[in-house]
Length: 242
Ligand code: PGA
Image (cartoon, rainbow, N blue to C red; front, side):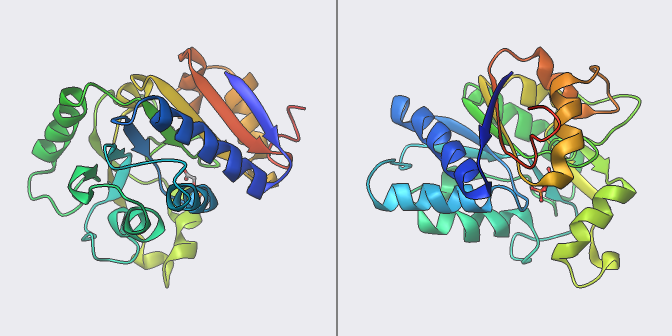
């Protein structure tokens, strides 16, 4: 894994945006795997700026998001579809019909998961997957566990993830307890992976990601086995590894 340490959150966001823009500049019809959460917000702002300035063109890009809460419609302001629309898609020249987020309201979740994986395969796989990382080492909603799943699947959120995400809801009781997420297999099949993290709170998990044992109890540690990962963090998140 290649480690890039930025001065602060702003610089991390710019470097990550540039890294992803490079993928699209080299392959205009790239398939981008996208992520939600607090961390990518400024990176998406930077991509919007680059798109408006003509430095990157998303008109031929397809996007595939990592995950979605079960039970929230795409219009719910905490759904990941809504997040993607408001933080990125509404402001760039991407064709919205080519942006995919799992359907958290699907009646048949198993079918939804299977079709999601088929869609990724039919697109020829993901060229560049963006990832955040949970304090517990989750990527997407692949939570620490005895076993990890290969494909897109229904999963239950761990207590610490529910607590961490409660900051976006009015109360912790409103946080959905289940999600549909791409599996570790789907993530590992991406041709390139960019993982971003910012702040001292992520320092311990970044150390585990880079230097810890490969274990299903730290799902992100699987990325050590991928041959094209760039980890872009700010100094605070890198403080235990530099
Ligand atoms: P965050 O979430 O960007 O809000 O820290 C990361 C994650 O949980 O994957």
